[in-house]
Structures are given as structure tokens and as C-alpha cells.
Amino acid sequence: MDINGFLTALQDTPLATAILEGDNLFPWIETTHVLAVVTVVGTISIIDLRLIGVAAHTKSVQRLMRQLLPLTWSAFSIALLAGLLMFSSKAVKYAANVPFRIKMLLLLAAGINMIIFHFVTYRTVDAWDEGRTPTAARVAGFLSLSLWIVVIIFGRWIGFTIV
Image (cartoon, rainbow, N blue to C red; front, side):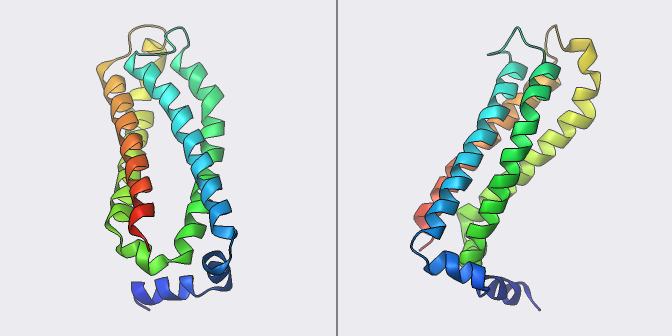
């Protein structure tokens, strides 16, 4: 089965059809997705702003991450599930949509940035947590914040281009 066959089969499932044809299901799922994304971006922004040196100067990065990342990951899981449900309702159209594709690439870039930060820069956090944030961590925070802002822009753009 090719990708279009898979996408067509996905959007022809009873659940995807119910989401597409129902009066209330899609708006509820979309609202859940938006609220979860706001939570993800909000919690990540607190950490990113601390890394950049703009906010939360008195709190250690480790403390912020311990407090916020469980909420971030929970909200991300909800956003992912809701996003997949919305995607299933018009899988063929979403897959061909340029803003959707760009959003997915930006999410991938944000994930790669996070992985590099956690496995490279964060490994030395004990040395800089209470002091000056190193350039690599500031760049990671700025890049993360920038990527999430653009993810939101393209996510919003999708709603204006899918008919």
C-alpha cells in the first residue's frame, strides 16, 4: 500500500469519519489540542527564557526542569493525540498541505534541538546552573523559543488553508 492509500484508509475509518462529519467532535478535539499546545509552549518558554537569561534568574535550570517537564510531556502527549485525531479526519489534505508539512519539520527541528541540549549542553548543568548560562545553552533556549513560535504560526496557518 502506498502512502496515499494509507492516508485514504486512515481518513475512511469510522472514528475519522465521525470527527469529520460530526457537529461537535472536531471543535472539541481542536480546543483540546490548542490548550495542550499552549501548555507545552508556556512551560517550555519558562525554561527557554531562563536559559536566555531574560526571566527566572533566581531559579536553577534543574529546578525549573524538574517542576515543569512532567507537565510539558503530559501536555505534549495530549496535543499529539488530539493532533493525530484531527489529522485522521482529512489525512490526504493535511499531508499535502504546505503549512502542515512545514509545521511538522519545525517540530522535528525543535525535537532535535531538545535532544542536543539534553545530551550535550545539559550534561554540564551542575557547573553552570547557579551561574552564567553558557552560550550553547542560551543558543538552545533562543532556538527552542523561536521554533515554537513559528510552530504556532504555521499551526494557525493550517486552519486557513484546509478546506
